[in-house]
Length: 446
Image 1 (cartoon, rainbow, N blue to C red):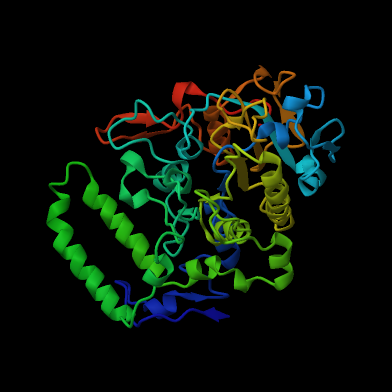
Image 2 (cartoon, one colour):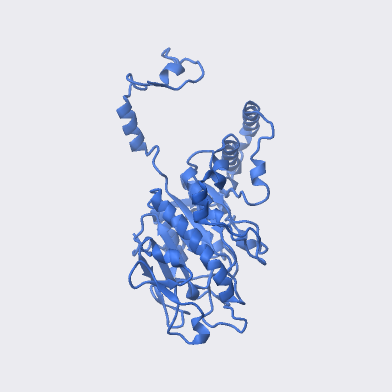
């Protein structure tokens, strides 16, 4: 017999609330335990939710030195690295990514990403859209769309969390914005400012906090009736989420990697917290925190790792960063599989564009938006394959060019969202499709 105690109160039929919450042989509200479990199953209560982890590589990673090495190209294009075999016969990737090579059966590499803009912004990787021609309020990021469509799993954990830290080049540290969806669907960003300190109640009791919340709700009541753009409704949702975060330790625990065994923390690795030039730090812990956040209830987690804008000393920089990226991302993929989360959690890794085929006089590669690469995993997609191909020089997509919108459509599909039917309203009330140009999920993956 299990009894859940609550405050003494009576319903209209005379049954006390305390007795109504008694679960046992007599059941709950006339339902047997078996019936309750069946109802839970139908309602998907307790099932693992679906989520997305997006890894942004700020600056534009060198595709021909990571996943698309061109050994038959001239020396001024070929580069210094050698390819190695992977777990999938016929697929080779860079020698400095041996752990990912061993997991190739769990990965998808896209070698033919096209349609990138030539600017150093995370915007296209976060929204799947171009910056030009935006509607009033701007396009919302993927996590904001999920927040709007799906809402939080519970109010203690925001549905959208952005881990990208502050960087010298601010657009690289963008975690995404809610655009026309409003502030209620903005990402929670614990690495910007003193967000973790802001979650402390500073001596205010929960009773007082509840009273204050009720008072604010009363004051805002009349404004809802005259709020044409729904801003008050958005703030109400934001306040509800903030209240949930403040009154629960669930989010703080998810952000605390100290809760993990040392062996797990060592598996993910230890990076360098210092910013490098205008780019970001190498925070290996963020891969682990991302996994902990989706387990705790986040629907979308974004993070940015290091700096990849190597106009000079491209190969020296990659020799430092590729092994770290290899360790962190491979640990994340393996960890998701071992925990049975691989079917529910999609992972995407990419940058804003690729790099030039020709190595410049400073041993670097410059901006090249004409083609780039991406890596996908999880979400129930068909893994163990390479999609697309570039020419002999690695400068043009010659097989199966893939648009950003196609990847976004695939991510939405993994979540059970039909991009051909689902829309979100903009500030004018006009329905907007989730991806542009009618892009559909990639047929190779679903």
